Length: 436
Image (cartoon, rainbow, N blue to C red; front, side, top):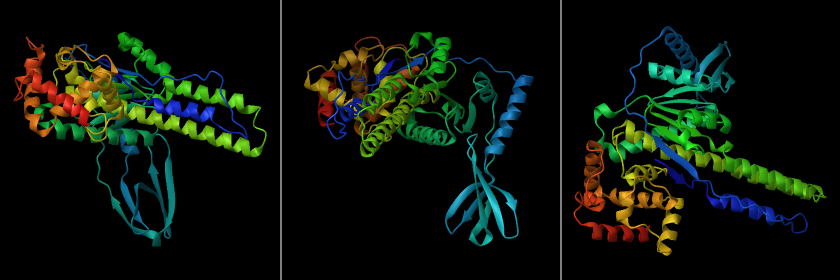
């Protein structure tokens, strides 16, 4: 399932260009023929190879790798909590114990550690942390063996492989755990006990070339993507946007402006102002890369949860709005909350009379354009309202139990589960959009 999602707002690049064209160094400085950078069009697809997994059998090498990963998890995990200065805390371990003071170390995965030396009068207490390291499964081992150059993190229900920093991984894991909780809370009625999983895999590439090579090997039909979910292996694969083409182009543009300004910066004041401009815009690019990656992982993570928790059948065909509607619904921190990029697309289409009729949206094999995604988002937001949710869930249940598209009119297929017909659904949907 392919999604063209404008997570990178065009305003960021416009901001860079506007600041560049209006930057003053004692006199206005203008760019000749400024390059207008397009908004990011991220492409996601659910790669459906086969929903069946091959049975895995332990080998001696697997056992060796398992022992190494277990050892690393135990070494990285905290064993004590230090409480000092009344309410400050650190989780780690005492590495030196002296009559008048201790040395306490907190580790950050493979990204270093922080040690403090504290006199005993500042220590409130030291508590043991009886937190067992999570079990390393055979599936974890095979996952790591597929990407042996990446760091292994496991915080149920997620297992991550990445080169990102410990702090970035902590944020990603927290985000995904929140997504998991939100997903279960919103669609838990469709999840059975046997659907729940504790080994959801996510690999994050930090290098665009490495990611592109992996896509060529694993999913050559989606070259140019920045992420995809592989149903066969139940793996979510994402490129961190700091190394995406749009970010590289933004950095190139800033460097180009810097070169143009170099000979015009005559005073120390002018050089300081330009250095500040450069620092602010590079910071904006970095922040937007983090936000774009976060939204991408939430979108594709929702696809992953829909399949791994049994809300959707891996055999499901057609009705592309269902998959993309659920994914876009969970893009924002508050599921179904304000989603400016989707809303802007809807308002523009509504004002221009370009909304796709609902009967056509419901019949689409997959969403293709940004407008398709925005419409799927709005329809899902409508159907997730309390007065429609039961009927919508019954519809989703029917789809997963009978994954072939319903025969007959797709609007009739949905309205069989709602207390009104297609014309009323269309009317309520348009009214809902106009109030967003």
